[in-house]
Amino acid sequence: MSKRQKGRRHRRVNRTPRPVGPSRPRTRPGPERTVVPDLSRHTARTWDGLCSYGAGGASVEDLCAAVGYQPRTILKHVAGLAGQGLVEQRGDRWYARSGAGALAAAQGG
Image: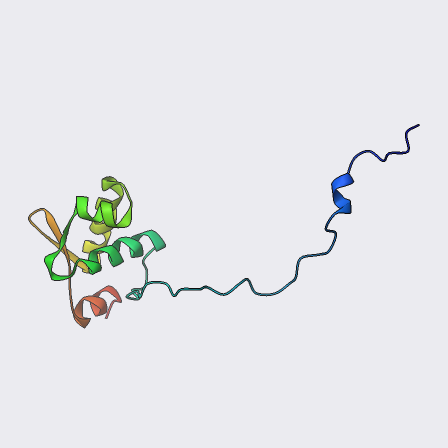
């Protein structure tokens, strides 16, 4: 028989357990977001992208480039946001409704 142990040889190296605790802190803060309840993470990303265009509004192609979703997904998101009263469509561009009234309407108030 061979004196060499077979299998699990890799376990001899670095048997120390990993430290338990919080992960390393974020080095840069995330983007400021407008808090709107009842939005999924992806719809909120589309909403933030639309808000970043300001009063000029954005086309679906602009939002695709800014957010990174397909046009079909963007259309589903803005249709849902329009149903909540947060956005409106004029021509081929979408505009985020401004003011606290739009947020109050979205919150059911």
